[in-house]
Each structure stands twice: as C-alpha cells, then as structure tokens.
Length: 204
Image (cartoon, rainbow, N blue to C red):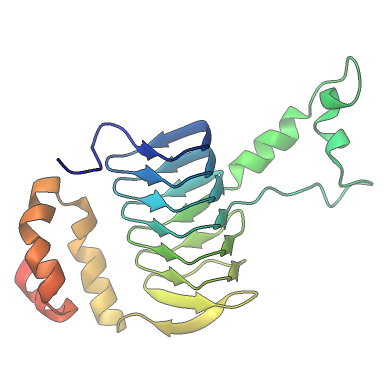
C-alpha cells in the first residue's frame, strides 16, 4: 500500500495545525506549523515549515524551514508590540484587536501548482508564486513571481526561466495537475522518460 492516502494528510510529529485544510495525498514534516491555510492535492512541506494565511496549489514542494506568510507587526503605530493586539494577554478585562487579526489573515500568500520552495526561503504575505516557479534556498520573496521563473536572493530577483515562454504556456494549458490519480499513475513512465517537449506533444 502507498504511504500517502487520499483521505487524510500524513502529519509528522509535533506539528501544530490551526484552521487549516488539506487536499488528497498531502504530507507535513516534523514540527511544521500550518495556520489559516489550505494545502492542495499532493503538496507537502518538509520539517519545521511555518505556513500562515496561505493558499497552496497542487503538487507544491516546500522544503524544510520555509516560512510562508510570516505575520507582520503594526509598523504604523506608536509601538510594534503584542500588547497592542494581544491585549488580553497583558491586561485584565482587555480584548484582543480582532480587526488587526482579520487584516493579517486577509493578506494571503498564494502558491501555484507544481512550485518548489527551497530550504529556508521566506515568502512574504500577499505574494503570489506562479505555477511551476522555483524559489531558491534562502530567498526572501517580496514581490509576485511569474509562472515557471526561478528566483533567488534577498530580496528575490529573477535568475532564469525554467522553460521558454511557449513551453510554459503549453504546460499551463495542459494542466496535468488536474489529472485523476489514475491518469497520473498511468502516465508516470512518460513523466520520467520524456522531455518536456515530448511529453507535451504526446498529451496535448
């Protein structure tokens, strides 16, 4: 029997999950924290990933120690500190600032399908990573990344395209990430053996 199953995510030891939902065949590495997020079919994160306020597509590959949607402090106020919005932790009878938390959760990070987020990378709130894009190890992504682009650095900058634009467009039109589990299994030899051009020619 396959290790991953369609009806439940595989959850590593010491994971923290709050207000999160998962598609089929997902996996969470040890010590990961997922909050107010959705992870699409076949996506996974390795150890100690920290994901908040994010919508993650299918087949996303998220390496260890990645941070997606790190939460902000209120930089436009007199203080940055928790006491402003987690006030009930500090003062008897005080309430937390619900509007602040609602605003924080509205700034969604979005990952497209078949993305690869390298070890220790950071994706800021509100950033969209396009289908097939790659974020290099240690990159800090502050702006949207187009589909099938590789970015690296602090702040992340374009490194190179994975494929020529015409190939990227054909892959997105094919949308293999929406295939059934059975079709994926049947086409596995071609995923392994064919070049991207050969694969497209066969399945378009």
